[in-house]
Length: 313
Ligand code: ZN
Image (cartoon, rainbow, N blue to C red):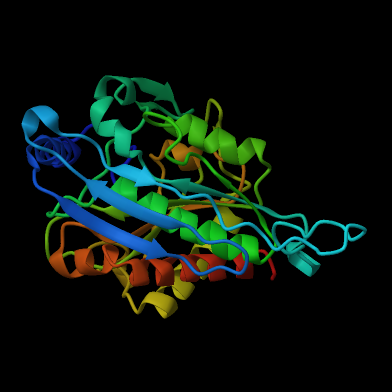
């Protein structure tokens, strides 16, 4: 959502509550997606099973992660073990990318924790938000994690070191300040926070959120404003190419680029960082794309191409 860690407003207040109402009402069985992501050495399958007998028994989706296919083992005992991923050469050598899957599927059940304010330097903001859903109930947090994993696979195949800020390994969060800290402490060469928006139907397309120049408390983005714009422009153009999506028709004046000064995840970053809102989950046409595994692979490829270009690869 583009109001991820924005201050409380009528828009965000009215947008979050339908998500929560949906979460307690949904019922029936939906087998979301079975996805085989092609990769050179390993593959993974994400099976989304959503079950719920009713409001009192609503459960979050279960994510099943079979073990990765092992790499071929060298037949000669004298040979060194094959590396898990190719060694990067040239400009990508030694580079680290941090990917931040927006929100967390568990946030809906931990609203008191994620509503607590954290210091973003220029302000105090909620730790995290629930994110949005499609009208059929596909959660933004599921989308962001799926795209992030696909993105990791593509980048690791290039030999880059990739860190995810979370991966279905915690009940909620992380908070926005921690998300920024993970990128900073990894000394990331590029950081991308993956999202999808939740605005009214008819609003379509992607946009990239760039950090504004801010200074206050621990926030000082002067050094990252320029490189983050470069990163964001490259991701936007590549994303448009691979997905065929257009820049958002509801903000950014058709550029697909928006500068914001209110996002803790950007304000606290000391590394080049952008958010990408891949589409509008509340629009039926965009939702049809966002719920397609094939489209998500194209999205991941476009984001990856933008990152690799930014890193000089
Ligand atoms: Zn979001």
